[in-house]
Every structure is written in structure tokens, then in C-alpha cells.
Length: 294
Image 1 (cartoon, helix red, strand yellow):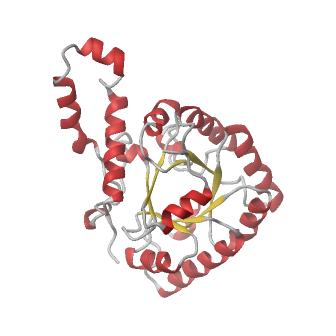
Image 2: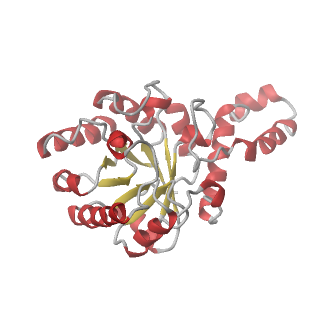
């Protein structure tokens, strides 16, 4: 498939196709993702947890994000890549936000950046968009500021939270975002927002009615041992039988591995991602088992 841009992503949404989005943080897994029909990659600050071993996303630095994103770009030259602006890289002022966003796209090759925060972050987004850099917003549960939200929890079940979500969508749209990520938002609310939004909505823990779905790759592959959110499905059990069958059908595993590189974890990861894409496109993921209750 051809590499997406903001225009083709909007066109895909308008055609009714559900977009697929996964995180990635390194070259090897990026090459696996590049060899699928995945629409987008997010180099998330979650890499601070699953790759760098931080307890949460707060300590991640701009330099660390650029290193991670640069490796992903080298491994996935054919994918639309979004860089996650880490905490402290955009909140202080419009100037700081633009400078760091510019660093991200210049030094790592990202196609866009993502910022957490609702209405209060609209001026930062407007400044970055004004500098010619596409931006994705992120509302609902925002991990960088989760302590001020009362921890990791569903956002939008109260009337005040719902009102704030709706105001945030409006202000971020006016600021120029081409998409918004809804995290840990009740499915009914995510559907209401998606049905009326003029931009793309992605969901992670927001039910099946958004325009696209995001998962953390290390959750999808079962690579992060500390915890796994309710909405995250591990796809390894879905593909391990197919992988084993492929090996059994090979006359010489030594030759098979050398010629195809399809005898190990790289191929298992690719098969898992392919299955995720198929389930999202078919409307099978997320189902009730991987969605929060309204």
C-alpha cells in the first residue's frame, strides 16, 4: 500500500474504512509493521515504560523520543509515523512547543506529532499547525497528567467530564488538528463524538465506533509483563497455530529461516499485527470483552 498522508487518511475515513494504528519503538519490529497493511504507527511515550523501563511516561525526554522515532522511521519507511510529544516538551509556551515539534519531524522523520490535553492545549496545537506540522490531539485519559485525573480510569461518565470532552473536541478541531485520540472513554460517548466530528477519531479503550483503533504493540504481542489494560487484546494465541503450521510445512527449517526470516518472533509479530488489522477492519475488534462499559 502507498504511504498515507493526512489527506488520504481523511479520505479513508470518509470511505467508511476503519483505520488501524499501532505503537512501535524500534527498528526490528518496525520492519515487521512495514510489511503489513497497517495505516499508521505511533512512536508513543509509552516506550518509556515498555522499552526504557520507567514506571510511567512522565520521565521520558525529547532526546529519547527522537532516538526511538528515528529507529522506527528507518524500519518503516512506508508508514505514516506520529511522534508522541513527551511531558515537558510543549506545555510551557507556544515557542517551546513549536521548537520541539520541529525537532521531532526534522531529526526523526516523523510525519506528525501528538499532544495530550484538551481545550487548554489548543493554543499550542494552533502554533504547531501554523508552523506546518500536522497534529493529533489526545483527550480522555491522558497518562502524562493522570495523577490530576484521579489515576488511570475511564473519563466521561459524569456530565461535567462529558461537557469537557465535547468542548475539547471543538477547540482542538478549531486549532487545526486533523485527528483526535480518545483514550478510556465510554463507547457511547466515543460514538457520539465520532458521529459528529469533522476530523478523524481514534480510540484506545473507547469502544468500536471510532474511525480508527490504536493499541500498544507490546500489549498486542504480550511483551510487557507488568500489566495489561482491559481493552488490550494479545493476538499471539490467534496466530501461533498458523506459525507452527508454516514451520511444519517447511522441508528444511535451516534453509527456510535463512531464506525467509519467517521462523521466529519477527514473523509471529507480523502475523499478529495482520490479524489485528483484519479484526479491526471487519468490526470484530474491539468487542464487549475488550471495551469498557458505558
